[in-house]
Structure formats: structure tokens, C-alpha cells
Image (cartoon, rainbow, N blue to C red; front, side, top):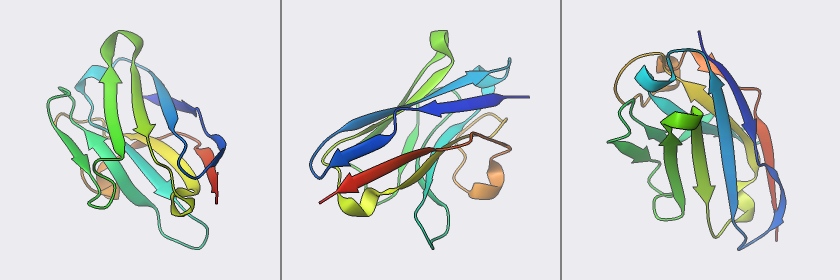
Length: 124
């Protein structure tokens, strides 16, 4: 079992940066792939970035690579999402998720555990 809690969201202006954090409790963090998803109003939840259980592999949604960076810190059981050059279209609720399995998880269905989400609003 993994419990997840996100933080770091807020209201920013276009061009600003934010770092989201997701603190995980439970003994499976180090053996679990982690991901960040987002859901904008009226849209489906989409995978933003993912990192493997080992931390050695990452994935980014095509349009976000270069602006977003996912990382994890095992000593703190925390996964981060650094977001640079934010745009109004990045406005969404961002969710942290854990697959509960080894490797890199790339589908919504692969994730067993979810946080409550943190809202990011980017004004133009």
C-alpha cells in the first residue's frame, strides 16, 4: 500500500516555473514506478511524465519534453515534477501516482495508487 500527497501547486504567470512534490508513505516506494498526470477542466486525465522504479528511465508526453523534468529522491520517498516556461494550457489539477510494480508505467490503468491532486493555474 502506498499513500501519496502532492504539494507545490498554485497560481503563476506564463513563463514562470513551479516544482511539484509528491511524498509517498509505505514500503513500496522504491519498487514502484511513479508518474505525474494532469486533468484540465472538461478533458481526460493524461500522463505528463513517468519515472521507473530504479529511476533510470523516464518518459515525457511529447509536447512537454524539454520543459518538464521528473525526478525521485529515495531517501525522502519523494517524486518531483519541475515545470519551466509554464503556459496557460498547462493549467490543470496535477496528480501523483504509483504503479506498485517495478519498471516504467505508461498507462493510466497501470497505476494503482493516486494522490488527491494539486491545482496549477497559469495566467497569461
